[in-house]
Amino acid sequence: MHNSEYTRPVRIVYVGGGSLNWATKLMGDLAHDGTIPATIKLYDIDHAAAERNAAIGMRYAAASNGAKVEYHAERELGAALDGADFVIISILPGTFAEMASDIAIPQSYGIVQSVGDTVGPGGFVRAMRAIPVLHEIGKAIREHCPNAYVVNLTNPMSVLTGALYRAMPEMKAWGACHEVLKTRRLLAHIANQEMGSIRYRLSEVKVNVLGINHFTFVNAASVDGMDMMPDYLAFAEKHRESGWCEHPRDPADEHARYFDETCKVKFDLACRFGIAAAAGDRHLAEFLPQNWYLDHHKAFGFGLTPVEYRIRERSEKVRAAEALYAGGALPPAKPSDEAIVEQIKALLGGEEHVSNVNLPNYGQVAGLPLGAIVETNARFSGIGIQPVIAGRLPQAIELLVEPHAKRQTALLDAVLAGDAQALLPLFISDPLVQPIGPDKAATMFRDMLAATRHYLPVELVSGVAA
Image (cartoon, rainbow, N blue to C red; front, side, top):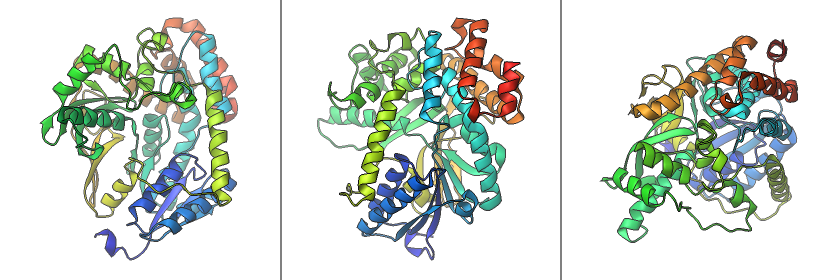
């Protein structure tokens, strides 16, 4: 079936529909594409934010010359999910106050984190908050729309995508992350530099992806049939000390100071291990011992994003959304480079699409545990989502990745089983936590749980405290 043959609108549910980031990207992508008739239900615990986004979405829909798209805010999750074809999940586990404690408490013990949402002490506790929530959403999907395709955008990506599969093992879910886009854009730049003109776009860069979310690698790359790995490794060697940015940095731009990266971490890893590290520097650094990169983050050209900046940035986004809600000028609908619309079209019977996603390991990454959530390419088509066999990481890299994959799976097991006694050993085993020793780590863990206890299952908090 092709898009022009749809007899009814596609039913899409956005859980976290008051989002100030992903939701508006989806609106712009759907309006720009103009080929998918859709009814989109926005559900959020902040219903007013969902209503605001529904109104903004209708403005985008009215500005589109393509298929009809309607947006509706829903007060109840079950009512939103009934009969859904696709479910998109993008939520914040807890509030910025909890995220601040995830960063500040470890910092008081000498542990530095650049993001704190995937691994390290911050990622661990964030996962404890979020796993029960995603598991409940997964059970609601099982009840109301068991045949829906489900895309998770929430970090920590690996354990939360895993939580959905624990709710329903046959669920058709994937985790979507845009970090690999950074490496594909860099490869396009290298190819264009060699050609002496802007000839190649992101879509023309093909990569083989393998690893786990935010600790992802590329061991093969091509542009227009040209093998790009030798060129990438040569570029990394050339820019290992100087770094490289896609756009020149504006020293006055606070966002750039905290979020832009010079690629020095990924270039250093490439030179050490002979493989392209595909995620951004701020994420890569947190999977490794602190004295590799985090202790020297200024020299490696990446920032430690303070939560107070995220709060200010969110306030600015709320003001911008309120202005749109009140009738302010609508930004033009332009593609965001995110793959969700292309993935949806492929699953509806359109052109086949291949992109990197997070799925249970059915063997697509040899050497990593079966069942763990891994990141590789997958093929999207009318017959579903099929992971692409990616091969095996170099042994030296696998030894760094495998313990994280095992820890993430064990953390998911412990939270869902209410096994508080299993949590502390897992927490202590993280590379960022190990150096402070087990006694300080245990005290820090209890401090962190106390700061976020309102968002945690009681049995986990009391069990660890005991």
